[in-house]
Amino acid sequence: MKRYIVLANGEVFAGEAFGAEGESVGELVFTTAMVGYTETVSDPSYYGQIIMHTFPQIGNYGVMYEDMESPRPVAAGYVVGDYCRKPSNFRTDTDIDSFLKQYGICGVYGVDTRALTRAIRSEGVMNAAIVSDPASVDMKKLKAYKIADAVRNVTSSSEEVYEPEKAEYTVVLYDYGAKKNIIRSLLKHNARVISVPATTPVKRVKDIAPDGIMLSNGPGDPAENREEIKIISSLLGYKPLFGICLGHQLAALATGAKTVKLKYGHRGANQPVKELVSGRTFITSQNHGYAVDSDSVREGKLSFVNVNDFTCEGVDYPDINAMTVQFHPEACAGPKDMRGLFDVFNEMMKGGKK
Image (cartoon, rainbow, N blue to C red; front, side, top):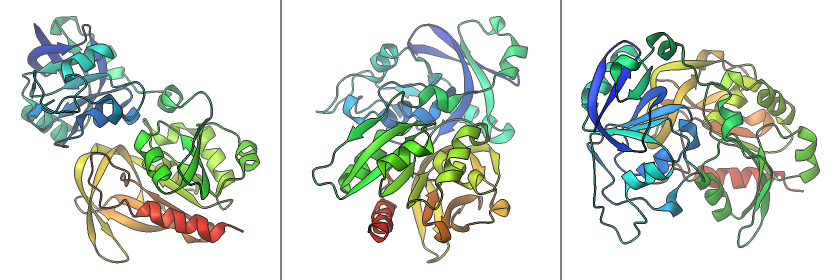
């Protein structure tokens, strides 16, 4: 069955339908990751977005529920060049088509993803509609579509506690749409994790009296989260703090810096970042459409920059015992270059223990 992608600039791309029935509207973004599609489609940071893979075929090794980064995917749509109908892997639970059907995500395959990617790289991220009839699209409404209340729609509704085999630290994780592998990584580093909703009051955190605070990844415009930013402002300097992706941006906003929307964002597992102190370059996994404005950083100091466009990839705040990074050190399926930052966080907490 034919299915079409209609861009906000009027361009139409024809493909074939797979996944769930229906139509959808979202912000079309592309990711260059070659593997880890289960983790990608289940990443809460894609809330309100249509995910497009630049890698030509997706689904070869099937979908494993154990590898999901959230209980329920929230992507607005899914676009691939081709997908594998009969995956081969001893861990496979289902195929990508059935997975999309299960979670109500409509997809398009057989589309010219190279041309679509060029369009986004040329004009920037834009809204798109996945439909069966291009003539049915209300272009005015499509152009007006905006992702709103993203964090509120993906954060947890209650506290959850995760126990490691040997607890040496307690970490409060602010869940702005946290990927499960952040929790797994903290557990591997002997941290008892108490995941809390995005707007959990400062008093509750101080009642827990953790050894450290983690600010998670998440979707949407960081500047929209005024209450979350206010809470972070009140917690800075209280305990060692580690922020990832959206958490990095929110911490910057809480210290007076600004964020800007990138032309087409950084999404994929091959983003090079340079550590300014050592001069070393690391390959990282990323998924974000906004960045901290480097020139606006006043309270901290830049720690990492993107090698491709020199945008801010990390900020250290030595005066308040905090560090934040734009990339994903917990990345699964990788790369694993920056997993050591969890060791650094452990050392920060160790130094703060009485």
